[in-house]
Image 1: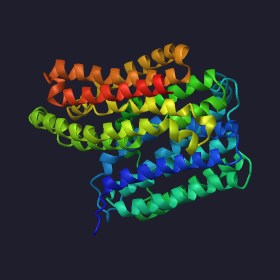
Image 2 (image 1 turned 135 degrees about the vertical axis):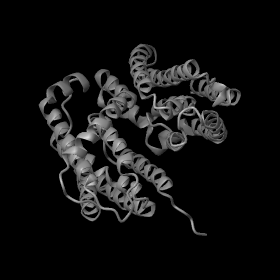
Image 3 (image 1 turned 30 degrees about the vertical axis):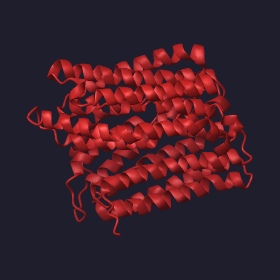
Image 4 (image 1 turned 60 degrees about the horizontal axis):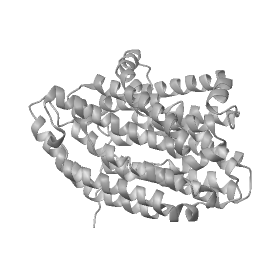
Length: 435
């Protein structure tokens, strides 16, 4: 049987490979001679690198995709080269920011602990962020199989370079060095792609236009995507690195829910052209969200059933509490399968999305700090789940008020409520009556 790999399915598989690699690295670390503190240093390293770059990196790439999305495999232009230049420039600015404000980051965000492996972190920022362009070049060129080959090779190399030092009994510093080397390999792969697919000509007009399109996306991404980093900063400011590692190992959203929900949402946007197709699109959203819920909710429930048994065995007993954090994050499916943001983005009401993201951040910080007083690090995770649900309900209210679309027009409310209540009940039984 000839299995057809599209550029969209390839990106989904690529993201799953990346997630699986990170999980496997964590498994090997906990089975090696590394202490929880050393693992916490590695997690802090990755956390800081992502926290200072995720918003501008995703904003620039999202703005870049429509601008070159129509290029064929044989086309050559300076667009890719100039996007690479922007990513490299932002990487340099970010590394400079970390170096300049090292004491502030250490004092306010890491509870006074120094930034782990600062020199490696600066190099990692300079090479890893631009290298993230590789998979999106394959995406716009619709070269799904090549993307999967690249993903398999690069993540296998990353896995080996990061875990072998730990297996051999070396210090965690060598694992971080292996991570940097694997990122350098990805950067070299990117330079080869640029040489083949782009013309190295500086285009100020393109750069200014791209920045103009990207800034709103960067700001929106900073707001909407900051929740996981807010959670991390709250933990690092109040607890030690070992506790942070316990939180990070559990604070992983179920990737199938996130990837499939986001992919569906993105695929719907091109179907919107004002309100002429709104009724048809609402029905399509309702139908597909209902199908996703039928198997993603039971799958999430199954994951919740085995989490407390699995975490101590996959990792070790030091990370048993991570199962509770993971179970809380499983509840994010309640908000992920609500799609009012898809309607608003499709109708080009992006400013509403931005304001909703702002209020979501406010609610997240407020509830996380409040709940932490009662439930410790689990309270921080609860605050995040509540904030995400608040944001989707707020957007649903805007859709209803401005466009007359009831939530039942694009969601099977009875099914969604039933599955949500069953999952919440399972969580209560597992966490309060069994464990």
